[in-house]
Image 1 (tube, rainbow, N blue to C red):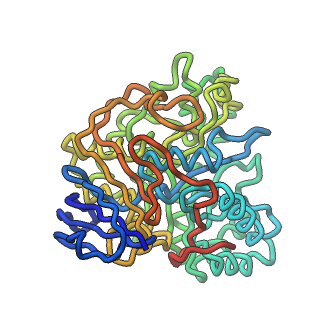
Image 2 (image 1 turned 30 degrees about the vertical axis):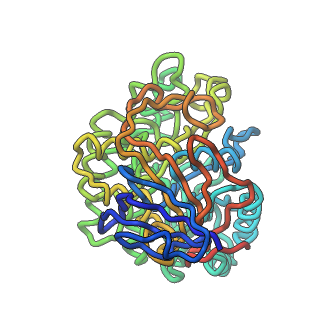
Image 3 (image 1 turned 30 degrees about the horizontal axis):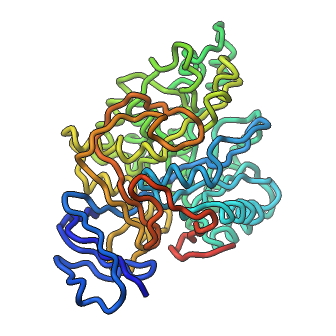
Length: 461
């Protein structure tokens, strides 16, 4: 069996960093040591020199929407295209979503996993949407848990498209069942009634710049408080997806003061982009839900990330083409979502490189180890340790470049971070011991990605 020996890199895990060699045999890391003599290895060895470079565990983008079908169209980045963009950004595993067909959660999960398994060139896990109560729901939840799904996804908005479980006793039962079965409850938090009231009193023209008015931060805070009360009462762990605002953060703090375990995810766009982007001819490109907030919200979330109040950074990657986004200037009909899987690592590393109170170890934790642990993929994923999958990113921490659609790989034709200078770039990405990106070339193989069960085992449904 052939081996790969990565030599003289600075290995970064969540709890340590050390200059060491790392030996890969097949799909696994088999040895980490200060020096490994290639002559001591009986197999054929490919030597990779990582002097001056960082060696990181493969990133886990815990919130993606590849191949999302919406309003009669589909996103630019399907499973193949999303895998490619992710690989260039050092992402080796994504956690995507299976929609609830409102008949059978196991069938919904299996259908999504089968579709992804045919075309993904990186590994993947799944969250399962739950959009309706039915008598068999607890049994369905138990079945998806046994099939390898650790988390369900709930919405507190989108009543008009059938995502929101409006009956509060039904919603409470979902929390109760998840607590009993050990499932994580992930929630998109925007209070639907508050949004409806804002729309009813609105007198504007529905331009992108008005999106934060139509979906205000208060709606996020109210929904977090409400979902938190249910989680406390039912003894359920709560995961807040894409936290966007300072008001929402304050509600998280209040819930933690009451003793609730709240895991918080935010995204690079809520850390670095503000509502000033929602003006001008390209404004529709920056429409997503929740909307972009004020600069003070960016700064509050950056501070929370650096002091450990935010546990996961993911992207909510949902990339419609530039043409699709610009079809409308009315926020009610603009396709919501932006790309982000490839941009995530350099953007977060840029914080580290520019003196923010965020260490390399903490960066690895929020981008890799944390999501692996919360969603049951650790230690196969999210770790540099003997026995773990050889999902590895070799990263140049000194490479200064400017993000542009011309040097990124999403099929959407734009990046919301156009012209943003960053420091740090993935130069090689390995998935289970196989090079899938190196020297600027993409080597991923469609269909090579595997569904990862929540106990960390590779599987197919």
